[in-house]
Image (cartoon, rainbow, N blue to C red; front, side, top):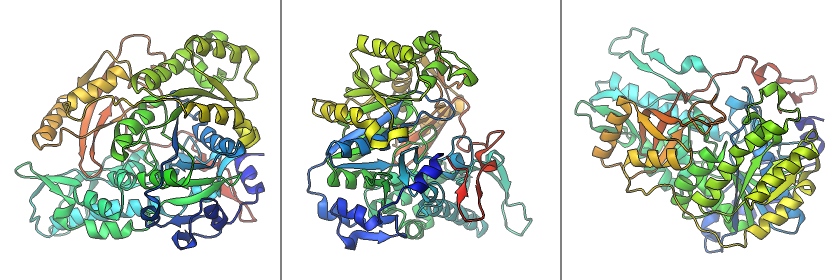
Length: 553
């Protein structure tokens, strides 16, 4: 059976029962049908004095184009912890429609390690991302409306883009205002994918609705003739945007196929945004569970770095343990094997590709100072020779390994990982950030590039350097950085998988995000609006005569 058929074959518990497992009073549960609920943001006030549970971060090697099953491992681990008698809670991101209809497919795990109802979660869910899209585009409309009616704020440059939650390369750069109406001002514009919108980052980093409103007001939407910033608050937009987001800010509660509670809330990409679920969901989960399993998108060079340098800083927390996920096919892919051959045994390529895994592990253990274990998402065609080679390489570095079969066995297939993770959580850990907030913007970028990516240095475009100077002149140089980079390589070149030769990171553009509270750094040829692949998943998604959705994986 495929993922969707497996998910459909399992009888879910009413979401009220799942909430009861966490001792959440009924007054804080807002049902969205039988199997989904919003949890009131007022719950945190009631439980905030409780001791936090152990936070477990799941990250990964640089992935292949189809991903390595990081979410599957996260879900399997939570179910595995439940199997060994621990009170576990998941805190994950919401899927974006871009990948669902694009190349990667759904993001609710796989096999018997899934969150459900998977079709709902992968599609419209509780409408959070649509609310973010509406809020983003209302702000865009208010900007152009202000300019149309006389431009009292004297906009010279608009930096706020529109967005849509789909992959559509045609919208990366557009001309708007071409109707020819009197007073309308044509200009160049563009779209981001919704999960790259600053509104998404704000939703995920806000502590409550008041913090959300304040952050929205701080958004810089353009610059005037004196090159001074114009904010959303200057347009009096923060109130109406907050109204659109009043329900979206509340964490969503669902369940795994084994009925482990799962908060799924917020969905910023990790290659073009900060890649973590919401602070509100994480804070709530930490007060409700003994162990909270969360993940950070793509490889540890992107997701884990931003999780630590942005989210952990904001929330004032640190992971008790980190799981670094890999597959044999990903390691062979990073050993130089073509995509079509990665399922064939190739010990030489595997040995070469292990270096990618070891670099991530070294970063987590020796740069960030955290406890780490490697989890192999095991496939049926992985051979004993490959497994033994990997075990030997990791043993040489003193790194523990767990083979996980959560896809086929659910929590039972992750009990070994769960046992090892719970032991790892008891060990002393520290947390080192990659840079100080007082460092210059350029120094922050160089520290991440050299320490985490292993680059020999950074080359900045003239435009990027001009923006950095402007950011520091405006007094925002002490913000953390959010580097947008390809997920496929430590470098900014998606084809440079081995990274054997010295390489530099090329910074093309820098954007100030005062609402989110970080500085976005675009490298290489990264785009904030992805495109569809030659054969998108959308071609295979359908609804049958019985009303069942098919083709989502």
